[in-house]
Amino acid sequence: MLYDYETIVVDCIQLERIEFIAKLDALLPAIWAKQYGESVTSSLNLLTVSFGATDFEQPFCRFMFDHLSASKRIDVENPEVNEDRVVAVWGTSKPIAIRPRDQSRMRGLLQHVWISRFPKTDRGHFFAHTMGGGLDINLFPQSAQTNRRGLWRKMENYCAKHPGTFCFVRPIYSDKGWRPLLLEYGIVKMTPDTTYHFWGNVFEN
Image (cartoon, rainbow, N blue to C red; front, side):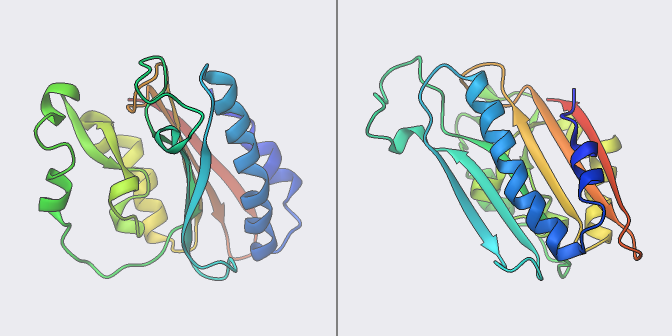
C-alpha cells in the first residue's frame, strides 16, 4: 500500500513550484529512511548520491543507498547482513536527446550470473533512460513484465513527456537481497496553474 503522499501534496498546495520541490526533497527522504530502517534487522549505512542541479531550478536526481559493505561496523562475511542496495530514488525528469543505450555496459552488469540469479528480469532503471536516468547505481533486477509494458511504462512516459516532473521510486524488500519485492512509484503532476496532483502505484517485482 502506498504511503499517504496525497496528504503531503495537499499540505504543500500553496507553495510555488521551486518551494514545493524543495519541501518534498526535505520531507520524503526522512520518511523513506524510517520505513527502510524499520524493515531491516542489520545496521544501516545510508548515504545520498546526487546528480544534476542543486538549486531545484534544473533537473536533479538523488539516490538513497544502503552501503553496508563500506561500513566498518559491519562484518561483510556475515550472511545475515543485507546486500548493498538502493533505498529510494527521487528527483525531476529532464528532456534528453534521443540516443542509443549503452547496451554493452548494461550487459556487463553481473554478466556471468545474472540469468541464473535473476531469471525473467531486466536490468531495469529506477529513473528511466528516457527521462535522464543513467546506469550503474540506477540499475536493478526488475520484472520484465512490469518493465516493458502497462502502467509502469505509462508513468515513465509521462515523466519523459513533461520535463521537470517530480517523481520517485521506492523499492520495498522482503529479504536481505538486492531485488525488491515491490516498487512504489510516485509522480506529482504540476499543471501550468501550479495545481499539484499526486499519481502513485505499487508494482509487484
